[in-house]
Amino acid sequence: MRRALDAYLRRLWADGDAEAAVLAAAEAEAGDPWAIVANAGLLARCRVEVAERDLCLGPALRLAREGVAVPEGAPYPVPIHAARRRRGAYDTPADLARRIVASAKAAAGEVRTALDPACGTGAFLVALLEAGVPEVHGTDLDPLAVRVARLAAPGAQVEVGDALSAGPTHDLVVGNPPFVPPERQDKALRTHLRQRFPWLRGRFDLAVPFAAVAVRRCRSGGVVGLVLPAAVLSQPYGAPLRRRWVEGHRLVEIGGPWPFPGASVDVVSVVLVPGGGPAALPSGVRHEEVLSLPNVPLDPDLRPGDADLVHRVRDRSLRLGDLAHVDTGVVAHQPGGSREALLHDTPGEGRVPYADAREFFAGRHRWLEYRPERMHRAKRPAMFEVPKIVVQRIRGGGVARAAVDRAGIYVGHTCTVVVPHPPERIPIDRLCALVTDPLVAALVRIEQGRRLDLYPRDVAGLPVPRAWLEAPETPLAEAWELDAEAVRRLLGA
Image: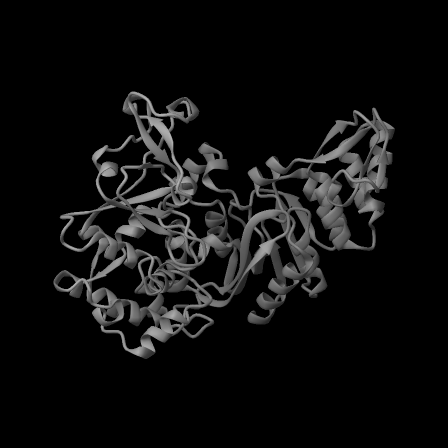
């Protein structure tokens, strides 16, 4: 980075042209395409500020005691992290780009042309050229990123263009599409995508329609290789895409999850042959098994026979939602978004005890001024003031976290509330034990994939053995008629 940064600053201090400074940084790394992608790519996504004092820039352009000196009053680059997150603009590490290109190329026949439809500063273009692909194409919406990509991959044809647009098909389509969750999406684009892809579901990440278009840009018999957020393989919003993949294409690789440098998200690799399905997953799981699970999870740990085990349990169960009212906690926010005006540290008239998930499970609470007319989805007081099960929505990678509350605590929307009806049908403590049982966690993992959250619909869908209606003291495995081998299989999952 030091060589690129020195060239960047010399040009920036000469005429103040930040774009020209980025290209100077790229030219300084000539002969090392991966350094151009990483270093000029980072500088291309910076804003320019003026140093209020003498400072030093270290690796990743962080302030440090040692590094490249910037005198007081001089302009210098500052990474625009918010803009990168908003656009999903992160450069793929060399080892990951090379791996996906190698997997995709190995699964293809003769490869003449390849495309990265959202190429950024050119990581996949460099990997494709290294792999010997004769004709490499790339497009990106960011003109400066395109100019950097042309310097990193001079053998590629790189143009400014929209990855979501139609265009010629290619033998290989690879890349790292933007990861943009719904809260950071442009509303007009989101509306357009729903019209274009009517099967899009819920609060989808932009990576989903990008992945769908990538398949359309691949010729029959070609191969698609993508880096995607791990959530695309398990979250409900990705289920329609996953179903289309399993029904119509052949999945060659499902790799990961791995952390992604610079972004707070785990990623996976997906390599598939469009039109080559239906076919078994790389793990050997038959496509019928995956499609029999409503969420169609593409979990690399899913094994042949797992789905059959889930169906055996379901045949002997009711849904928790058939035995209880299940809903999210109170959303303690005013219409403007602030909740501090409603929360207090002391009791008072019209105030009720309140806790979010962290406070509740730590045994603490504050006081909520319960004013339904000033709150989003205020909920019914009766839901909180009777004995209830409180489930933390974020469960992590293990069992769910839940506890019985008999103190009338109003919990926030980071929790799910379960109120049995009628209360005497199954003891509430027994139901709470079921929610937190490792067998249930294993079943959820098979049905849903590697999801970290439990929404109310997921809690309502938990299987409750019918045998408990007559004898709630029956051990869970016995109530589901699971033999020792089935239990070992689940707990080892």
